[in-house]
View 1 (cartoon, rainbow, N blue to C red):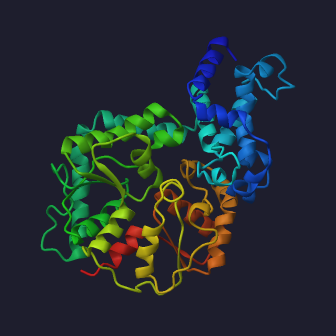
View 2 (cartoon, helix red, strand yellow; view 1 turned 90 degrees about the vertical axis):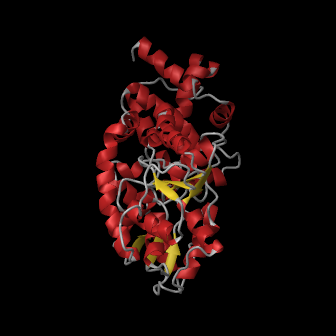
View 3 (cartoon, rainbow, N blue to C red; view 1 turned 45 degrees about the vertical axis):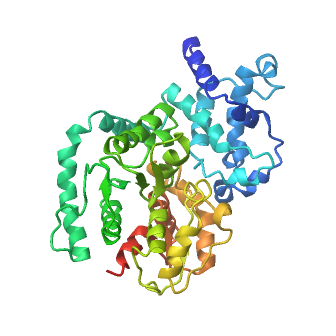
Length: 415
């Protein structure tokens, strides 16, 4: 590797060496408890797909350049130079990890492998070998943020067509204004995804609750976070922050997307508005009596998959269960559940990559959980999880239906 490039790589590592990161890099007894926590090694029995296996790729590079033993006695210090082989190992490590953080729950020292993979990702960006799909998608989101005025007319025409769907579903006399945009001082700014489903179903719920709301021009998903580029992550997230400030809204509500919720909720510092998941908002509407659901409308056995970023890393556990216990005659809990629930294998941007066979194999623990419940309907509240659950369903030929929570709520409103 050229000296100038190598220096850039070392600077990239140094920029991520916070106290927690040094603690995670220096401390590991290789006890192997993390083997039992990672869905990937449970589905693909290779050490490199364990949390410690992934972290060791980064640790060997760290020791080489930041520890005396690695500099002067690399073989004794288990240290490795950065070269093409190691860059390939870093790519495999970083993008076989969903960042679900289930391993943190089992590690005696609380080592956060997902955080360590942040170093692998910045090295891949510096080396020019980060996944092209995530680069393209994050760059597109940044460009939209820089030139949003050029996108607005086209987006408004799409929303006009969706308003007719909302009007028909609610039996309203006119579609005009059922999906408001650029409304100043509304209570809520709702941030959706690119698909119509993520706009129409929440719009039905907002209108049924007679909410004072407005729709964001931006999509909630943050490919900068999946890519591991802190600057792009912040730019993409701040598009919505700035929009909310300009409109003067009181609350920003995030679509069914765990990462999109976790970033403004926990990673941007104090904000002048409240951040809420659409799941929490639906639960609040029910508690306040602003909407009602058809009790027992789902007659087949139903189970719920906790999205890792919404559940384990976001703390939203009870709200979706209380909603489903109204709708389902036969609700069945997965085991293990809540913070110990198995990751489905689609997070961390993996569902956007060309890796379907890998995701089917690594999804085996989730497949086993679903089968054990005997449920015929699997509900979740994250776009990535739904995509991955569909991959698991088709990959293992499961006789189940996969549904979004907002979709079944909108279908079963009492209006």
